[in-house]
Amino acid sequence: MKTFSKLILTVIGIGSLFFIIQLVDWVAIFNPQKISKTTEEKLGELYWEIISKMEKEVKNDSITIPIKKLFNKIADKNELDITELKIHVLQNEQINAFALPGNRIILYTGLIKESENQGELAGVICHELAHIHKKHILKKLVKEIGLSTIISMTTGNGAGTETVKQALKILSSSAYDRNLETEADLTAIEYLENAKMSPEYFADFMFKMSELMEVAKELTLISSHPHSEDRTKAILDNTKLKKDKHQDILSTREWDSLKNNTYNVVN
Image (tube, rainbow, N blue to C red; front, side, top):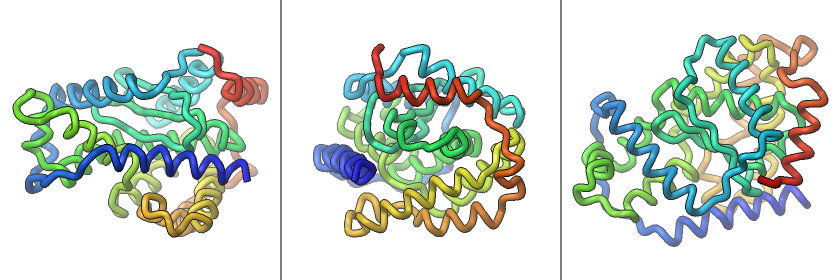
């Protein structure tokens, strides 16, 4: 019941944003490679400016330090350059994480609470890192709103606040297409196994989410995401490192402390 309540909070949070923001008539699709690094960084700054006004960021070291340790270890074992990565933990009961342009990843405290072990949380982290390093964020935005709209948002030529909010909604609450999600899942498996973490825990988390979606299958914003049950099977089918070979990144004490402090957030 507690988990289902969190799901309802997630739906309400996403749904409220959905009804506030009107859909617009987007322009045609262009090539994401045409977007410069500067434009991508400006996009990320625009989105973060909106989020930071709506959400409370957690800056407590007892939470941010172990989270960064997870990111750093995974990046190190996969030779990923995350020197410019900005990690934001937000105090929000929704079970959610998403990537923004300009090397930003958002994690909600609801996700940390819902993760029964660090293998589950690491799986989600790896999935979002994959979206960033495979350039999925820009591909999704270009497909949904078009290159000209993206550029206008960063130059101030015609794109208002509501347009920016609409683009943010696309990133935070709607699914990538199945090909991108599949690529992110398979890349996450690679990242996890290189870090000596078993993707089976990631599969456990996705199965848990599939059960929640089954309960709320009539809710469009939930059922529109790729089926977690199918993704669970695909993760297991492609996993080589089993749970008996799994190695945690955080010590038991560090993980327990992270979980406990997430339930008692004080900035």
